[in-house]
Amino acid sequence: MMGVRDTRRTRRVLIVLLAAALALIAFSYSDGSSPLLRGVRHASGSVFGGVEHAGSSVAGFFGASSGSGGQVQQLQSEVVRLRSQLSQSQLSHTEYQQLHKMLLLAGTGRYRVVAASVIAVGQGYQQTVTVDAGSADGVKANETVLNGQGLVGQVTAVTAHTSTVLLASASSSVVGVALAPSGELGWVTGPGLSSTGPDGMLKLAVIDSAAVLKPGEKMVTSASVHDQPFVPGVPIGVIYKVINKGGSLTPLALVKPYVNLTSLGIVGIVVAPPRRSPKFSVLPPIPHPAPAITVTVTPRPAPHPSSSGSG
Image (cartoon, rainbow, N blue to C red):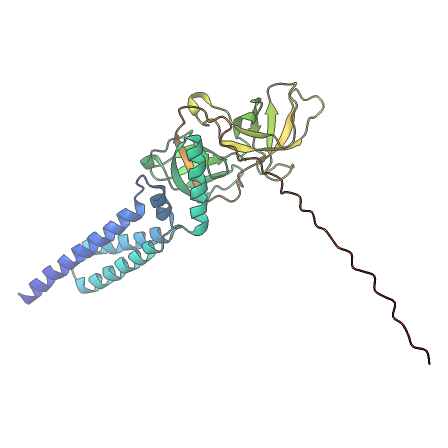
């Protein structure tokens, strides 16, 4: 009877530990509506690795007929390890800053976003990244992706828990733009990886052949049809250099994007556009030059010539 009681007790302990492990797994994979939870869910790959290991331990429990005491110990240590990892799965200072800036930009533009983290970078000539939010989070293809500085790109493919984002710097990327404050319309294209021009510069062309482009002019996304793939008003960048070429039908320029597309962390996927276009309200303010500082220098009096005694 003692052996039977021990077995039942062991199984009850296993069930409790199993429930705890599954609760931790559910928490680590939950998305919820809070962007902070999605940031915690990211935690690089450490939590996911622990969960997968715990899953194998749980699978071992269902297939085991003996050695339950050892499995109790193994699952106990696994639960402790998962708890420890999850307690450390907080947003880093950098991630928090990125999330804060992204939410500020989204709030200014009245964009409803799903926060996500970049978890992989595409290989080859097509410049893409993978983020850890998908259809289960309400994400669909052809949605705008931004961060705290401005436009990142567009969603091109979606699974339940991930999305592929085509970066604005990709050679196949074409984004409609509106220049501030004139409202001049045009489009920017990505340089791709084989570009021979300045690194990271987008190429701008405008519709009006008589338009005069100037370095320093800012631009935002112009609305796409049904706001897909681009919602209006997302900051893109500033004109770096005008490169009108002989025989060109439209003025051309190089654009320095606001976003460093080679270093991405927290991003936001726009799942609902604003009711009204924010126009240029989301653009960063023009930095004011630092006030001139006048320094008054008082000249030192000339030293008196030293007198030498005569012998």
